[in-house]
Image 1 (spheres, rainbow, N blue to C red):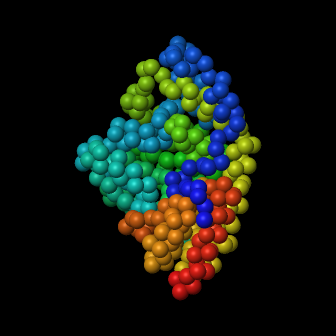
Image 2: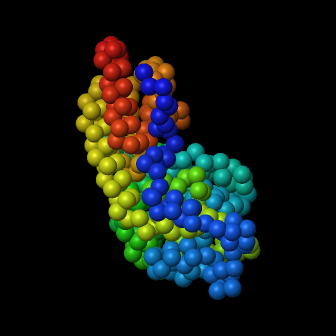
Image 3: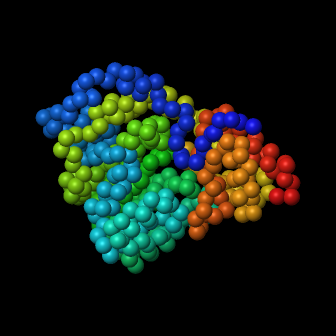
Length: 349
């Protein structure tokens, strides 16, 4: 029995940041620790916003920095959703979306994500019908989506955005880099859809959740949010060089992503044939696994007693599922071995 607790529950990247990120911290001096930024004298927010603007082919003022993607989501909803106004949210999604809407007394309209064999998918026709019926002030789209791991195809995304072009649409791409490394597409979306806000974070792919830094690409008609989000004294002067170092460490992070892809297949191969188990395809750093509902409590207890903490879902639509955050390859094999051991010890399950 392991004496060390292994966490598979919060979608953190357990490989850790690239070595260059630690170098950035070691090289920090009094300027980063004691003085406010003076980047405003160059009429920019920061070196990080400059770099991101160049990467995405947008103007620097159209990059917003925040305290992780969470912060930017909250700011956006608080800025654009008024009391009694409607916001569309995926049916299977991060619980925090609903919490933010409640904070401003918004009316939540859930649109369906449906199960289709071993994958979940957005029901685009139903999504568009609900949009036409409710005419929301804000629409939230998550791709890849948490906790189902599915993505909205490029074709479907363009179709949806064209249909909703007069509404503020937030595209939450916290897990995007696991699915695709392309940035050119964001520039195309930005040019075509001025009410679109794309949010990404350094928390997941870049393993910088503790640093709390995210960014958004802001549509040209969303200047209200730029003013709402402005930080007169600048941004975090330690987190920015760390994020820049991460952006330069392409090979390091692609190597991790490749290991995770291999481990998704490992879980599918080893757990997918267990009675009552479905391992859904995922384009993120986690997998959703459906299990017999009678196994939820005993399997959770078995894993926890062995120092393995997994997210067992307790939601209206996902109450017979566990979401497994991918750890290192060693961690993932320990978890798979332990689940298989439980099933062997409890054949009647």
